[in-house]
Length: 308
Image (cartoon, rainbow, N blue to C red):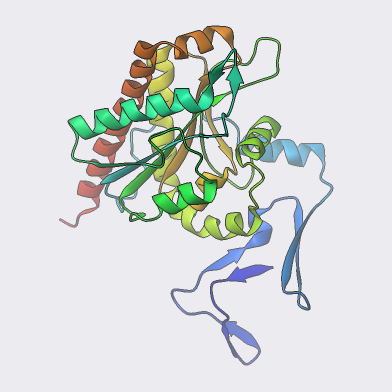
């Protein structure tokens, strides 16, 4: 089954596509699922298929964590993106506190880090800086993506900042950075995305967004690797790698986009560090350094792509 951007013309019983038509092969996007179309109700149904353990393991290996040590320094950037705007999205807010332990709330930690990052960018670069929220207010996920999408996709970077939590005995440990993918790296990544998506309906959004993310993925992966490497190196947290999951805010944004889980509030040691203002400043500086490195790589890719 394919999803077309417009109904095609038919010539001698065959579909005729125009040069700018988009064709999305749903069976390729959803491995191990059956995609069917009901003409009477005009609905698309996606159902799971039985699969062998070997097939599933092979697919999971394809989407395994991308360690920040496997890094290409922007060598694979196509040169069709020019960074001018950074949209910073502090997770949660208002009545939605996010993760919390001992009266330490994710919404407050990530807002402070985001504001410090915004100040660094405003003071030291010519980049336009936009925050989806700058106070303790609740912003629906759809509004966060709408704010980002006001800016051109070929010159805007979206960074969503969160803190993690775990019910494990040690409370989880480390830093991880996510890029968009319809299929999560593993069950843990899938559960995290489901939790952060706050029950938002995603199926159609995610199917259509695949069209947008095909071209932005090299940039999303590049900034994700830089952020992951900078945070783990400068903060000393365990490196949980660059991972993939179907987060709503990553699905709904049309530009290069990442979601970073700085550390675990459920881990006593990491929570105590995040309570320190100087450590939050250090976190913002690590994010800033990654963005500057990304900007340099983008500029080099643009220069390389220019005709001689």
